[in-house]
Image 1: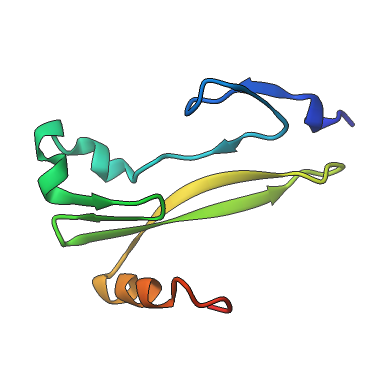
Image 2: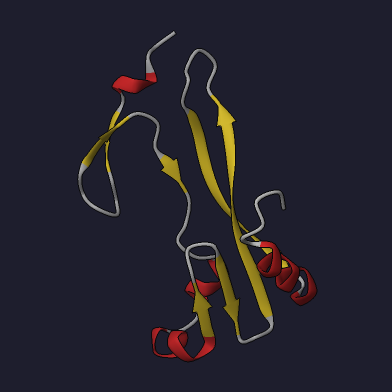
Length: 100
C-alpha cells in the first residue's frame, strides 16, 4: 500500500504545492456558471456554503468524506445539493447549532 502523504499537487486556488490528499469540488453549483457574467451580481448570492439564484433556486455545499484504506487522511469531495426554500431556511437557522 502506498503512502498518500507523499502525493504532491499544485493548488488551483493559491498556486502553491501541497502534500497529501487533495480536496475536490466546485466553488458554486453548476447552475451558477450558466448565468451570464453581467447578471451574476444581481441574480445570485454566493458564500462558501450556500448559493441562492433568482430567489428561487437554493443550494447548499456539503463534503463527502471517503476513507482511504491504510491512510489516516480522507478524500473529501465537495458537492452542491438543491433544497426547497423551506429546507434552505431551516438549514440556515440551524447553521450555528453544534448538534444540528
